[in-house]
Image 1 (tube, rainbow, N blue to C red):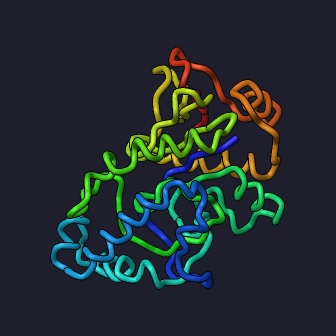
Image 2: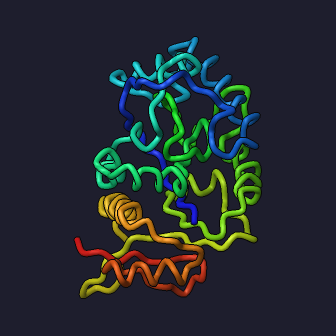
Length: 251
């Protein structure tokens, strides 16, 4: 199984890893499109005013331009530790055991805007780029990434993909039709029926991945995922859409 996570806008600065090495990242067939986006971001960072407009930065976020300027020389840290925010705080990878972190490295991809999906333990620098951005001299990210990312996932040939991405990031690399997968929506049941959740959406996905990393189950299908969930006390249920699972939580 592979799990696809969205990134977070907020990131830890610094790191003690060597500078970005594109050839060392997971899904090496994405080397060329990764290089193109990094080159475009570094070039954009040379003009603060244009960067601010393109990246839609506030005055407090201008320091992110320097992160982009230093993409090729800045220190790195594992992607699972780089990102912060609700999902990654709930996952709390830093407190997991070494075997659980290895499991994350083997089973989790985090879908970044400049690099496409990267392994949870792949070293990446801090950066600023969102899924909906259009970079000068480069196609809109959806057009740039979608086909090549879908092909890279197909080449990796995972038996089953659990897609926890937001819709914006799922659009940057749809799961191949030939790959068994499930897209997860977080919902709650109340007197009014079933409704989707916002804040609890990210937290619940982080807790789900943490539980999987703690248990380190062997999962190769939707059925085996649901069997694990039942034993773990996690409510995952089928929907009318064969590609979607609902993760049911309480607010």
